[in-house]
Length: 272
Image (cartoon, rainbow, N blue to C red; front, side, top):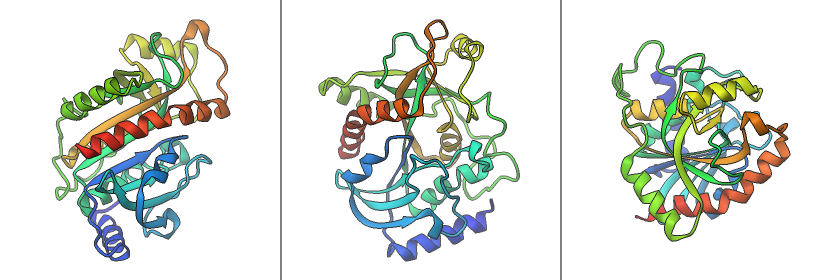
């Protein structure tokens, strides 16, 4: 997608929201849309009404953009994200993050539902991302002509997730007795879940969780020099030796159970 399309969309949203100028962006993953109820909403708009915007096709994703305040900070929140497995290009998947930057966002919070590869994890635990693995993605949102207006051709990824935000999140979780781990997230395309052999491989590579999102958005955000914070909800256990068949209803229920803790951490981070 072109820089001109990004400008058209951002100008449309500036006009629609009367130049609301959010500072923080939030992307809500599968089963994690209830945080939106905590927002003091100023404007809301369906993805279908935004020019050049993709449309979420996943049943558990509401598909609307929310402008408002959370913990007193001006935010823009995606209630539902886009995935490569829906048929979108990587450039389309990260298009909303590009628009956020144009609207004034400097920090991005990303949540996801993921499978736990680490045997120490339990269902509905939270994991703060300190790194990720993108090797299994079929492409990269930065492939193609570089949009120099948005960032470097070869952005550094040695610290994709902001160390200060990680440190503060772990302290918030400790003070509120919220079970939280830190670890590495491996991104895959989906939509099928993985085989036992694939789970073994991911563990050998050092991954603690696996999911079908997040990494493309973080890559684009870091290219644009946005600070990033990622939080995974462990919705099922992907231990090859004790693997059970996954059920989407159970995955969503596990995400919903963990959501209050996730919401508390994000609200507290915003209040700092």
